[in-house]
Image (cartoon, rainbow, N blue to C red; front, side, top):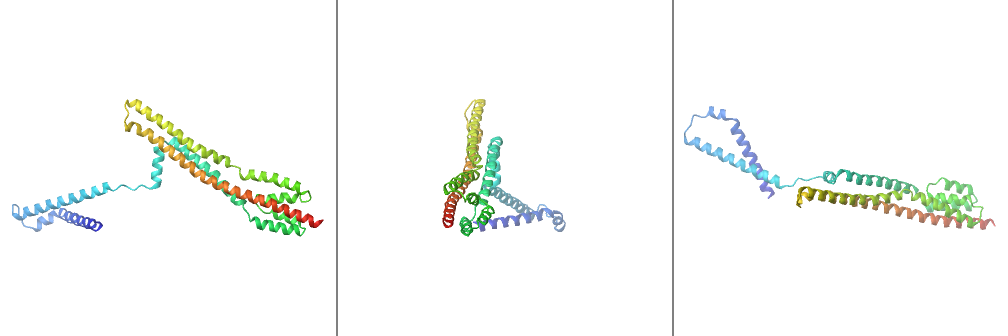
Length: 285
């Protein structure tokens, strides 16, 4: 089929080329040929010209029909832009704003939590070596020079190494709550935008339905053309609102997983540090 189509196209190009040559050189043909007006040869040439014209017209009509039947491919960006405009720019802008602000908070939290992660095992091993060697200040320097909540908890415990283990435990637990609050800072805004996005979509749905009923009232009858515009706004705003909420929910769950991992590391670090301190004190006694 493809080969036959290419042959037809080549045939059409050849026919158009011959036809253009015949139309472009009428004077040369008239000067070079004798006057054969009224002769059978002139009638044959006229019939051939008519056949060429009809063939060209048929080929052009076929090409136009093929081009009309082939749907124009639309890029994803253009399709998204068209749907954004069709869904009422005012409400779609609010939904897009919720997406942008929500992603901004998500990215900030992801960067903060990523920077807060450290090699906990190596940190606790280095601190244990310093403490067992009696170099408490060296252990404090290691904890102070390491980023993240785990190192902060270790430093807080080392500051009270001369106190009772229960007092150290309470201090570490209290400071751990502070560090946990720092890890969860900004997450409430993400949950807010997760709730706002579909709410804006549903609000657009209600307003679209009101627009549809207004058009029905103005027209005086119920017809698809009168209802389509309002229903389209209603459905598009709802779809985009749900999509925004789903995107933010995925990032939010990822952030919660990182917070849980860091919380577990802080708890393990506090237990290990207490064991190290108790062992250090028992050796001193």
